[in-house]
Amino acid sequence: MSNIEPISQGAPAPALNASGITPAFATPGTVQLAEWAAELDYAHKLGAAMAHSNFLPQSLLLDKNKRPKPKDEVANDAAVVILAGKSVGLDPLQSVQNIFPVHGQPSMYARTMGALVVAMGHETRRTHAANDSVTWSVKRAGDKEWQDFTWTIQRAQLAGYTSNKKYQSDPIAMLGAKALAEACRIVFPDVLMGMPYSVEDMELEDMGEKSQTPAPAPVNTTKLTRKPKATAPEPEPAPVAEYEPEPEPEVVDTVTGELPEPADEAPVDFLAECEKVLGDKKALGELGKRARAAGADELTIGTITEAWKAAA
Image (cartoon, rainbow, N blue to C red; front, side, top):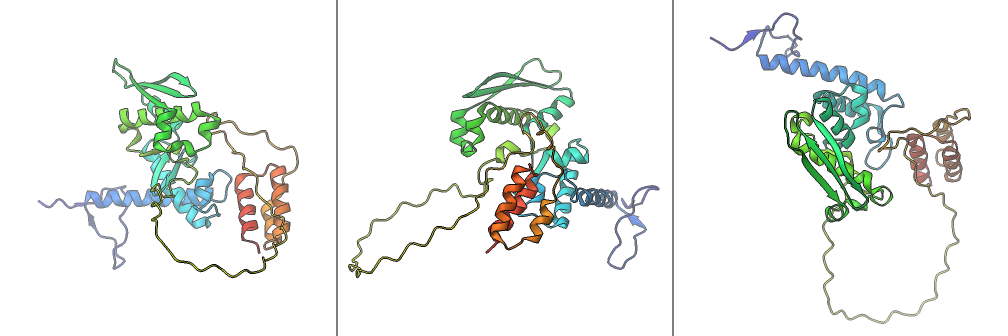
């Protein structure tokens, strides 16, 4: 008997073959692939709609150089993030707010990992919290013994994470996120479906892109050089006033999830203003200051800042 079966009634038809004819028979695997393709198509439609909204984080809106990505690329990334979230039980909006692509792999907030674990009936609790160490204890449903996971500031330093300034401003939150994420990955891999990173793992200054390999030590060599001829010093160029972007406040507190108070003033379309003065460095600098003073969102400020950098 052949293992090829007709497509069951109601199942999505597989994609057309090279000749443009839908096959009359398909294996169960082909039907499953067709279902996945249909899910990806629906996810892409949602991603395309979200790409024109204010509900996507900068990790999806900006490229690695902090420049706005094309809308179709944003839609593609959002679609894959939606499918990754679906695999662990998140709806589309939860997915784009809690899962982020980092170097081609998904990452998730530690608090989101903990929420998924608790939703499956397991238990988590923070048993110790200090500026130099934080411990999370976890227990699978039905187990009697708790398992403890501790991250100390020394461990974070050894791993290279303390280059993130948040370890100086809020060490308890960062060490706690590391401990909770580690506990969830080790004890509850079935819940996370192999989610390899937490967002806190990747929140370094360079997002892991700079090489950690130390530069080679200089080699001592003997070199004969002629004494340079005396020349008149070149006049120093006159200082040029530069607009330096101020540190950008976070739109959402990654620990508490709190949002800033809404601005009382009527909103200004700073992106439209930015397009009018493209190439004018001084005007863009003033526009950036106005946007910050008005409490504009990170994407708007980032777009103005990049336009200012690119201006002659």
